[in-house]
Length: 190
Image (cartoon, rainbow, N blue to C red; front, side):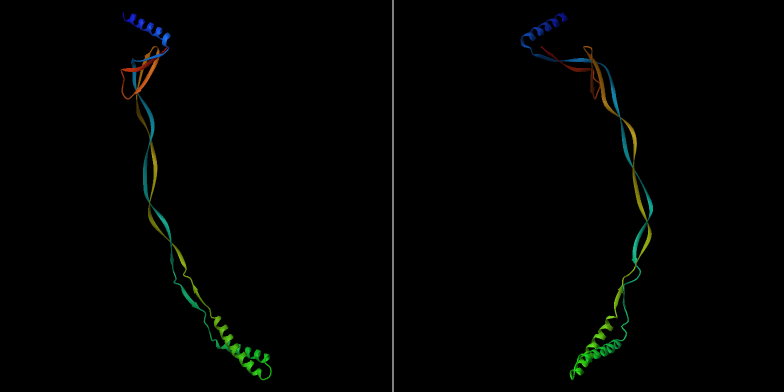
């Protein structure tokens, strides 16, 4: 009797499809024939830090001499004044005429004396020597570290692969637990 009811439903559906040309959708359940767990293999990297102490050369600079002021000895400026005075007097004597010769000679001698003394002072220079630096090396302990990665293969659970058959077709459904039935939505268009 059950088959005759199904036949009648199909006939009604076919007749209705000729009149309205629509679709019908319903859900049925397919029995799970086989269910087994699925895994994936992944590579897991773990950082491992290794540290050690190492002696390292360190360069530093130090001054070994303080700055010093050096002055070249001035000597006696008298010699410069005498030579300048004589040269100025001779020049003044040649420039002047008549009674102005004596005045020019005296003026030349005074100016020559001042110029000679100034030149003698200028030759006495002052200079400063810079401190000299020495590079020195000492050794210090320094901590050094390096990071490397250890790799290992890990199997991760993906889920269950549930397999069933509906009208000769294989149906596969993944889930986080084993299923007894798989829901299948059937659409009939007419």
